[in-house]
Image (cartoon, rainbow over all chains, first blue to last red; front, top):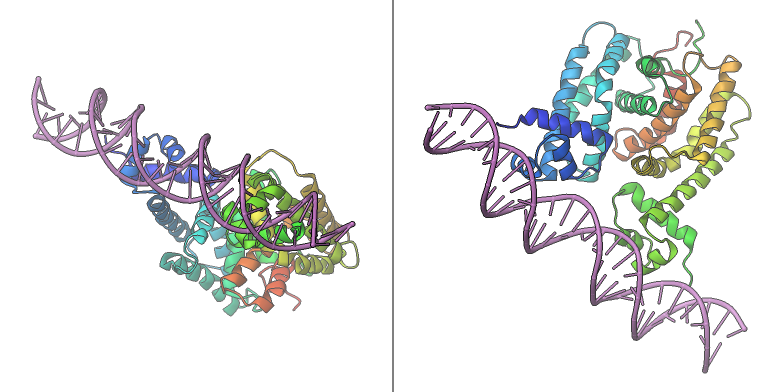
Length: 183
Length: 183
DNA sequence: AAGGGATGAGACATCACTGTCTCATTTGGT
DNA sequence: ACCAAATGAGACAGTGATGTCTCATCCCTT
């Protein structure tokens, strides 16, 4: 009888990832629910987006947890993070664009925690000599997000093969486009 | 008396770069023009966006021309392209998101030409041994766009310093995060 | 079987944006 | 200075989405 709220959010996320401008009615139908019920669970579009943001946060935290960023070689940790985060790319991209349009100054504690945890991996790599020092961890974090999202779009647009996405993302992020001297 | 159509488009671009959902009324006011006049020059929002797309195309083509991508070392050509394209990042990002929401299948000849020209730089670099072969030119083109746009956002959000933006973008794109063996 | 809570369908007013129109005013050219 | 073209201000109807409400129906619980 009761609607599975979590499942409803997942369906909404799945739709909005593809069509960010979907109306509440389209979202409701995509979730197999009437518009009235959708409103009973989420007061309005804003409330829905906020709930989706929390869902995205939980998912990304789970992905980050699965990647075990504190373990082993920093470069391998980056590889695991990219691989785990990639399925979330489209959804997270939606949340980014959606939230940036609302309050530009509002800080999001949850995202900052994740940023810090990813940034710590790069910093660890810098301290043990794995990563170069002239690229700040903050920039590398942004670049990681950016490249992961871009690889997802590129696959969707047929510009790169799906099976190459994770490899080319991590290789570019870690090794860059230049040919290594020591091959 | 007459409105400077080019200047109007520039103002519209400047506003929409910051607030992509701005209404026609807001756009008109930002351009210092009445809503009626805006409609006299552009039949509707779609016509305006198309004109903006052509403007973005011209600007990017001019930037690419200024970068002289066919000259000299391929890596230097990439550096010049990043430096020239950076001021356009926000505007182009708006156009990308705007057009992806409309016709997903519609091809854009102008963008393909630019993609091809940038891709040719990476291919040239691969052929002369400057760039690695396991990252496709198409992916490197996407990564270039992505990182340029990200660096612009990161500067705007205060996550990286403005003067570091171009350097960190090119360095990551070309050299990656790993420390080079041959220092 | 009965009752209660939740849902689906739809009506309803509201709101913001859009596109079009009119008319007065300003501007630029001659 | 004059005329024509262009602009600004505002009115207007149409549209689509939103949020709220009602009522019938369904399903689970007891």
